[in-house]
Amino acid sequence: MLPITLFLAFATISSAHTVAWIKGMYCLGGNNTAVDDENTDLAVNPLYNLPKTDWWFQHDRGCDLAPPAPGDILSIPAGGSFTVELAHNRAQTTLSYNGSFTSEWPDGKQHPEDWNAVTDPEPGGECLSDGAMHCSNQSTTAGTAWAISYESELSAVTIENLVVFSTLQLTPWKRIATYDVPDLPACPPDGCICAWLWVPHLCGTSNMYMAGYKCNVTGATSTTPLAPAQPPVYCLDDQTKCVAGAKQMIAWNRMATPFLTCKLNANEVELDGNNIEVDYPLSPAYSESCGWSTGAQHDIFTSSGSTAPPSPGPPGTNSTSSSSSSSSSSSSASNPATILPGTSSVPGSTMTSASYSSTGSPPPYNEDDACKL
Image 1 (cartoon, one colour):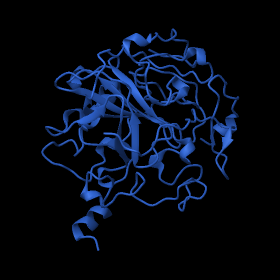
Image 2 (spheres, rainbow, N blue to C red):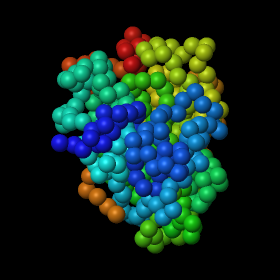
Image 3 (cartoon, one colour):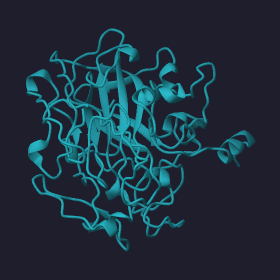
Image 4 (cartoon, one colour):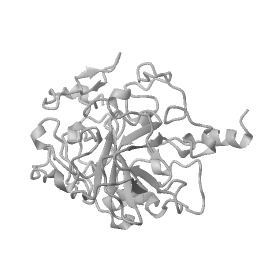
């Protein structure tokens, strides 16, 4: 039987969305550095309806002012891989309660390998009953990413010097996730700043996720610096628009709209800080849809020939508006691109996932189907 303290903790675990948990994380124990909260989900909450000054490294909740404990740092092995825990709450990781509330899944519960909205024990219609996953099955996950800045102080990090260096398709899905690393150069003596990133494209309002970490590149042999990061461009419909080389995180902080709204309305506007624009109901993702291959990003260095993006187009066009290894969760499978209605189906459901060739264009969508998103 669980000790009463653990039972009470389990009974009150809050479950919001998903973030990467590991030592070195800002807000690992909440935003009060005098208290180590093992049952926190503060860093998990999504970023939306916020100006850039508030969403940048979760300033809105004070996470940028809650650095990791002295000595805690995320190790990024150059040319290797590193593992984190994707969970809805720190309590559902091995960082809390000796891992008593963990499972293979981010919510700490048990699910079948083919967990999907259709056979979910608590049917959620087109989406998993666990809305924090923002998907209907694994094929409809958007993919997550890591970025690094060679600045040692978070206050010195900008969107131009924060470069995406690894993406992982088909995530977030299970708790354990392993990301591959390119041949990064060493960090300054006081370390680097990293960010975990996610833009879900299904099952909920338009939002994004960004969490901060103190990190350090280990085993570095290269001295080639990273190129300045360019804004990504949505290019699933036209591969010639893809931005090569070092890219910025996706800053896509659209104001929230009611679920199942079919068209943008006058109350929905793009807040400052966005660096990408896509046509509704599409959304950007850390995948081929925005020019990212899966896994380690090997074209982000100054010798890689990073190119500037196309000139911004008029509103409504697909162009920019301003950019210790483990064997778990391999990054070798192919990533489904941004969801479009009317393509490959989820079993027993009208929810769909796109899976196009690198040069193919998405088929036209039916607005009635789009409303189902």
